Each structure stands twice: as C-alpha cells, then as structure tokens.
Length: 110
Image: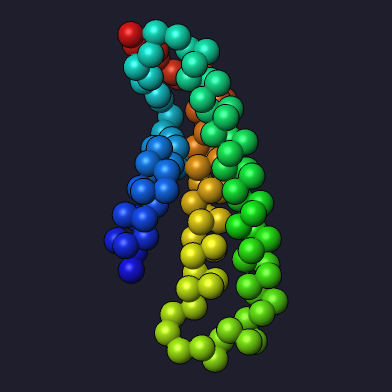
C-alpha cells in the first residue's frame, strides 16, 4: 500500500518529495542563476501546501467525527487513511520549504 501511495504522490506533486527531503538537509545547492526565483518558488510552495494542509485537516476532522459510522465498513479505512497521509505530507513539505527559506547555507550555481 505504501508503494502505491508514493506513486500517487509523485503524480499529484512530483516536487513534494524534494520539499520533504529539504527538511532534513543542512546545505542546499540550487542550480539557478537568479536566486530570487528560488525564494519566490519556495514562498509559493509554502502557501500552496499550507492551504492543502488546512483542507486535509478539516477533512480528517470530519472523518474522525464519522468514525463510528465508517468503522464497521469492511476493508481499509480509506476515508481516513488518504486525507491523513496527505495532511502529514503537506506538513513535511511546509517544514522543508521553511528550512530552505531560513537556511544560510545555500549555494547558487548557474
């Protein structure tokens, strides 16, 4: 199931995996000759993932409220599983973009 989710995540937003990896990095090498483009991209990504984080938070809260009704359904609880995984993924992407924006160890290469 995890491999399926990773493939689905790559289809939804291929850059999200890079943003999540940035959260654990100390140094960044960016291949651009215009540093302002990099920072503009990261600021846009923070807003995008913050918006979808809040949407998935609301959806997950609604699903938790309806858990007594949904729990007896056979099979995996996809109604809770998917929004919760997306919630965590957006949170990690936000942490990665903020790490990139706050980092002082960025090397820009043309």
